[in-house]
Amino acid sequence: MKEEIVKRLPCKGTDIPEIECWLDQMVLEGNFLTDAEGRSWHFKKEEPKGTRYRLDAVSKKESGPSDEKLEDYRLLGWEYVLTYGRWYHIFRSDDPQAEELHTDQVVESYAFKRLESSLLITSIILIPLLVLQWYLILGTIVDLVKYPVLSFMNFNIENLCYMLIVTLIWWCSFAKYRSFRQLRRSLGSGEVMKPSGELVLEGKRKWKKYFLPAFVLLVLALQFSFIPNKKDLNEAHGLKSLPTLDALKLGAAEADGSEAVMERSYTTYHNLLMKNKYKLQEEPETARYGVRGGPSLNAYYYEPKDSLLVKPLYHDLVKRYAKDETGAKESDLTLLSHTGFDECIVSEGNGYQILAAREGSRILVIQYTGPGSLKAQAGILFHIVNVSA
Amino acid sequence: MAKKTLEILTESMLYVLMSFIEKERCGIEIAEFAERKTNGRVRIGPGTLYTILGKFEDEHFITEIQVEGRKRTYRLTEKGRAAYREEISRLRQCIADAESEERL
Image 1 (cartoon, each protein chain N blue to C red):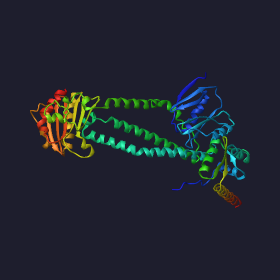
Image 2 (cartoon, helix red, strand yellow):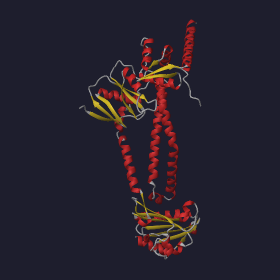
Image 3 (cartoon, each protein chain N blue to C red):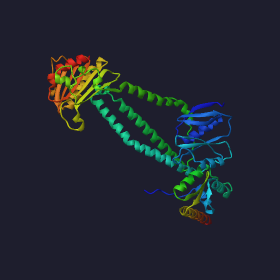
C-alpha cells in the first residue's frame, strides 16, 4: 500500500501561484496530491517525476468539470484531480510536452470574475447581519461604561460570540473577494503571476493552525459558563422562596400560586462570578399583546461569589433601576431603615416602583407596577430573601 | 448598467473565432486549428480554450448546436461573425498604420 501523508496548506487558499509552486515542490519530494479538505491536503508517495499541477478557476456553478471538459483536457494532457472549495479545479499533467493549462492571462482573468462576484454578493448579504450584531454589542459596551460591575457580571456572551463569528465569516469572505479581485486584475493587466516566496516564512506562523480550534473551544467554554437556564416557575425551588406577586398580595412568604392568569418566567444563570442569580418575571397575559392591566413584577436576585463585588454591584443596580429606569434623582431616593436589610432603597417613576435591597452578599431588586406599595412590603421581601437563603 | 461586451480580442480569442469561419467545431478541433494555422506559434491550453468558449457563449458569439456523447459542437453566430470582422478590420488598420510609418 502506498504511503499517504497529510500536509497543511502553507498559504492562503486563494493564492493560486503560491499553491501551484507548493504543489510543484511536493512533486519534487515525491508527494502527489490525492485529496484536499480545508487546509489539510492529502498526498501519496510516488517516485518523483516531471508532473505539473495547475489550478483552473471554477467559472460556472458546477460541482465538478463537465464530461466534455474532462475528455478534452485529457486529450490535451491534463488529468482532473479534485475541486477545491468550489473555487478551482486542480489538474495534473505527467507529460512535459503538454501545453500549459492557461496560455492567455487575459482570458484566465475572465475565469475569476464569477468567483469574485459570488464572494462580493456573500459579503454584501452578510453586512446587515454584521451591522445588527455590532449594534447589539454596542448596547453592551454602553452598558459596560454606565454600569461596569453589573454589565460585567451580566455579560451577554452570546451576543459577543455571534458578533465575533459573523465578523470572522464576513472578513473571510471579503478577504477572499479581495484576493481574487487582485489576482484577476494582475492577470488582466498582463502581470506575470509569481509566487511571493512566503512559503519559507509560513513555517514561523504555525500558531495560525491552532487559532480556529482554540477560538471554537473558547466560545463553547464561555457559552457553557454563562448560558442561562430557563425553568418553569412551578418546577423551581418552590414559590415560597420567590418574591412573587402572590406573596406580596398575601403578605406572606408562603405563596399559593393563585395568580393563575399571569405569564411567569423564571431564569437562573450559570456564571463564573455569581454564586446564585435569578430573574423572575410576572405580568398579566394581556400585557403580552400590548394591553396593560393588572400588576406586574420583575425581580432580580444576585449573589456574587466574591464579597468584594457586592457593594459595587449594588451601587450599579441602584443606579440602573432605582435612578435611570424611574428617572429619579439621588434626592428622590428613599432610604428605608428597620426593614431587616443592611441597605434598602425605594424609588418611583415612569409607572414603576423600585426596591433595591442588600442583605450580606445577597441583593434583590424588585421592579413593580400595581396598586400595592413596595415600601410597605419590604419586611415580607426580607423574609423571602432569608427563606431562599 | 448593460453588461460590457468584449472590446478587443486577444490572439487566442481571435483564433478561436477564426476556427468557426469555415465550419462548426468542437473544443479539441479548435485547439488543433489554431496550432495548425500558426504552425505551432499559437497553442491554446485547455483552460484558456474552455474559458473562451464559456465567455463567447455568454456574449452570444457562438452557440452550441450539437451534443454527441461528451462532444459539444459550436457554431458562430451573426454577432460573433460581426465581432470577428470588426477585429480583423482593427488589425488591418494597425498594420496599415505600421506600414505607413515605415515608409516615412
